[in-house]
Image (tube, each protein chain N blue to C red):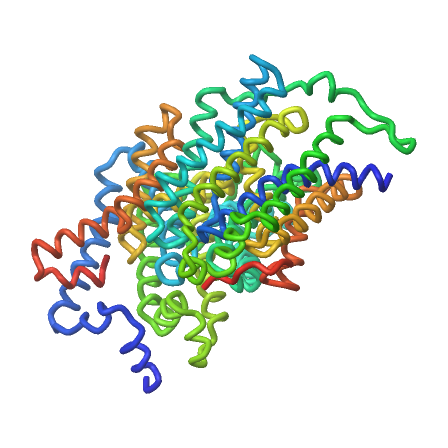
Amino acid sequence: MIALLIANSLALASLLIMLASGLALMYGLRDVINFGHGALYMLGAYLGYTVAQVSGFWLALVIVPILLAVVGMVLELLVLRPLKARSHIEVALVTFGLGIILGQIIIFIYGGVARSVEAPTMLSGSLTLLGLSYPVYRVFLILMGLGSCALLAIWLRFTRSGLFVRAVSQDPSVARMMGINSDRLSLMVTSLSAAFAGIAGVLAGPYLSIDPGMDVVMIVDCLIIVVIGGTGSIAGAIVAALLFGFVQVAGSVFLPNVAALVPYVLLMVVLLIAPGGIGRGRVLS
Amino acid sequence: MTNRAPIQKNLCDSSMTESASSSWRVPATGAAGVMLFGFGGLLPAYLASDFTLKVANEGLLLGMLALSVAFLMSEAGLVALGVASVYGSAGYLFAIGMSEWGLTPTIAVVFAFFALIAYSGVLGALIVRTNPLAFMMLTLAAGEMVSHAVMLEAVHDYTGGADGLVVNFKGAILGVQAADFVNPRYFWPIGWTAVWLIGVTLWGVARSRLGATLRAVRQNEERMRFSGFNTYLPRVIAYVLVNAVAAVAGLLHVLNTGFVSPESLGLGVSTNALVAALMGGTAGSIGPLAGGLIFAFAQDEFGARGATQLLTGVAIVLFIVVLPRGVVGSVVAVLRRIAPGLVWLRGKA
C-alpha cells in the first residue's frame, strides 16, 4: 500500500519535476516566471498526439522536444530578449497572455474534446515487483523523471555552461561583470525548458488525458511547486515536486472528498512557516 | 499633519505637489464631475435600449473589478490574478446565506461582504509577505483553490456544482426592491453610483498617506523598512480594500443576474478584469472603468465568434508591449502634449 502510494506519487512528481525545474531555470536567468509554461506543455501533449498517430510514440518522444526547443528559442528571441528592460511583472504578464493565445490556438485546431494516446506495446501491461503489480508505463515515467533530474544535476554541477547558469542565478550582475554572456545562456535555458515541457507533454499522453484545460491545471500546480520550493531554486523545486506529488496522491487516497484542496493546504502551511519557500531561492527586490 | 508633510514631499508623484495649485481648478473639476455623474447616471437609462444597457451593466461590473486590479497594480505594484474568486464567492455566500441559514437579503449581503473581508484579510496576511512575482502566482493559485472548492462533491448541495445556483429573493435591500436590481434600466443608476463611490474612494486612498506609503514600498521596500515604516500592514490593508471592491461588484452581479455559476469565479473573469485594467490604463479611476465598458462591448461584438479568450490574450500582450498606459492614459498623454494647459488632467486620469 505504502509502496504503491510512493510509486504513484513519484510518477506524478516526474512530470512536475520536468516542468517546475524548467520554470526555476528560466527564473534564475531572466527573473521571469513563464506563465505560459502550461501552454507549452499542452502544445507538447497535442503535438505528441499527432506525431504518435502518424509514426508512433517513440518518434514523438524525440521529435516533439526538438520542435518545442525551437518554440523556446522563438520565445527567447522575440519576447524575453526584446522585453528585458521592462519590469519582471510586465514580462510575466506577457507570457501569461501568450499562454492564453497558444492554448486557444491549440483548442481551435484540435477542438474541445479530450484525446488519449496509447502507450507503446513495450510499455503497456504491468510489471510484478516485490509481489506488487505495477503498470510498466509508470515505471518508465519514474525512470524518465529521475533520469532528467540526474542529467540536470550533472549539467549544472560538472559542465562549464552549467557553472555559468549557476553563477548567473546566484548574482546576475557580478556574473555579467565576469564576462558571462547571459543572453546566450538564456537562449539555451529557455529552449531547454521548453524541450522539457515538450517531453512532459508527450509523456503525459498515455498517463493523464489530453484535454483543453490541461495547461491551466499544470501551470497552477507548477506555480505552487515553484513557490514552495523557493522561487528560482532548482533543488527546492525538485524537492517540492516530490512533496507535491506525494501530498496529491495521498490526498486522493485518504481524503477523496477534499483531495482537490490538499495541495493548496500544503502551500498555505509552507507559506505560514517559511514565506520564502523551502529552498534557498534568490530573493527578489 | 506634521509628520505627513515630508512623506508627500519625498515620496509622492510630482502630480501631488503640482495639483491644487490653482484655485479655480478644484471647484471646476468638482462641478464637471458632479455633472458627469448626474448625466451619466440618468441619460443612458432613458436613451439606450435594454440590450445595450445590459451590456453596459456588465461593463460597469467588470470596470469595478478592473478598478480593484488596477489600484493594486499602480499603487502597490502587485498583480492579482484571483480577483474573480472573491467576485464569484460573494454571490455564492449571499445565496447560501439566504437559502441555507434563512438570513434576510440585507443581512445576507452584509454577511457575504464581511465573510470575504475576513477571508481576504487572512489570505493577504499570508501572501503579501512574498515578492511581487510570487504574489501573482499565489493569487492565481488561491483563485483556483476557490474554484475547486465550489465544485467539491461534499458541498454540492450548497453550491449546485457545475450547474450553479439560481438566486431568487423577495423584499428589498437598502430600499431597492428585488425586481429593480434585475431590470437593466434601474440597475444602471445603481451600478453607476456604486462605481463612482468606489472610484472616488480609491482615488482618495491613492492620494492619502496610505497611498504614498504603498508607492514608496513598491519602489524600494527595503529602504522603507530601514526608514522605520511598517511595510507589511499597508499592503495587507490594500489587499483587503481591493477585495472589498471585488466583493461589492460580485454582490451587485448576483443581484443583477439572479444567478451564480462556477464561471463567475473562474480564471476567465480574473483575466477579463486584468485586460480591462490594462486596456483603460491602471493609473487613476477613469481608465479601468472605461476599460471595463470597452471590454464588455468588444466582447459583445466578437464573443459570438468564439474568439473572446484569444482576444484577451492578444490584448494583454498588445497593451503591455505597445500601450502600457492604456487607452485613457495614452489619450491624456497626447492631450497633454498638444495642449499643455490641460496639465490638471493628470490628477484625474
